[in-house]
Image 1: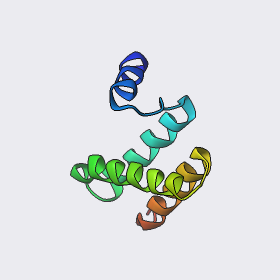
Image 2: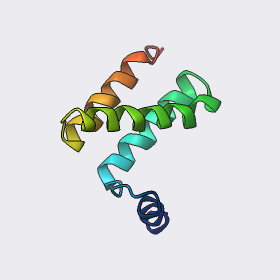
Image 3: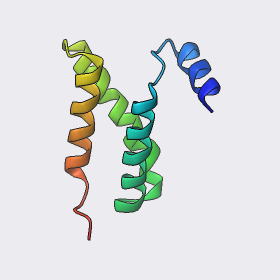
Image 4: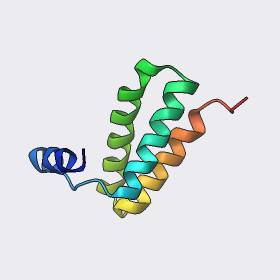
Length: 81
């Protein structure tokens, strides 16, 4: 999987996803799938990426942009239980 993800990033002209980012993405995808609906997961991750890129374009570091977008996404999820 890691090799394919690096290949995909290169094909898209994007920076490869770091291991810690992969873990965060998988976790938030799980939260969306279970807390909202499975079909919403790919769309939510697309929107998450768009949010990250918007923050980067506004001058944020990649790490800050990723953390901020994740926080915004998580804020929209229903509380567990």
